[in-house]
Length: 176
Image (cartoon, rainbow, N blue to C red):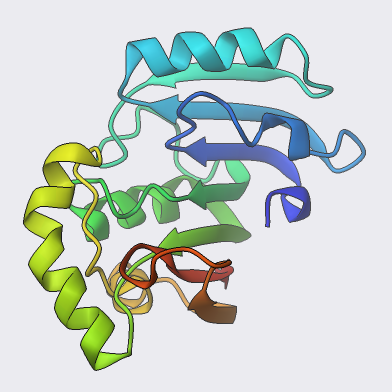
């Protein structure tokens, strides 16, 4: 999803900047990375010195983006929605900063439709949240996006790789 972003891009939950090498300079004029963690932003700053697009950073929570309304062409969200306290509020902020016609590109893990896997996700989530950076394994990504006013244009979901099923159910797509 990251190489599909274009124009002025907001990456919410940029963390250590692992997505930075995937932004295409012929498509992206600037990336603004937001994360609440100062140590992770410092790692991202170091990684940004090796990227081919201009990058700036803002320390902030996804639920309160200190950015102008309608100021981004694309928002990138990868494995972040699971860890925010209020996902619908965070998505509403992303929608606020997207220009009309802008797109949200997402790759997120969440609730499995398989009943036996979902049961394990519900059982493990309380412990996983403590060790996994507040990660909620049971979030319904499509429902959260819809509640925030997004319309999903394309989506696919399934288990990623050969990983543990309770941790690897992934939603990927584009919303506007």
